[in-house]
Length: 128
Image: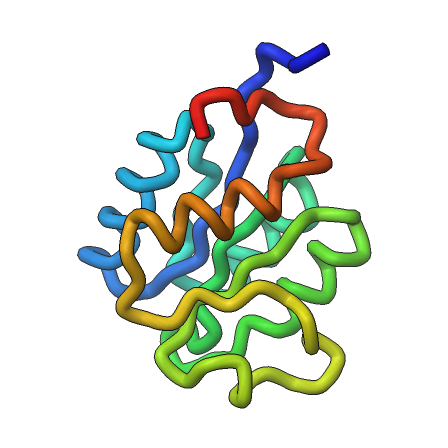
């Protein structure tokens, strides 16, 4: 039985315009935004404290790698999606197989990746 609870998606992105575009896409998808965070320390606070179903993480946030946030989220069982212009080759080996959105990405790419990431989440993905 589907849940009527919106999926909660953390957005970590330091470029304001890109963040706003991602937020719009995620909201169109029917999910609730957590954040956005434009610094790794703010992202870590949200990753540790907020109930989350998925996260879209810019790999390089204000000159700092976001991998510690990804580790924390994955330990909590939260699905992680990396957004990067560097492709999967720029990720540490431990993230092999983690979904990657290559910047720039389309709405369709984000929607498909997010739908897959939320497939097992206990939240409503009916609008996907």
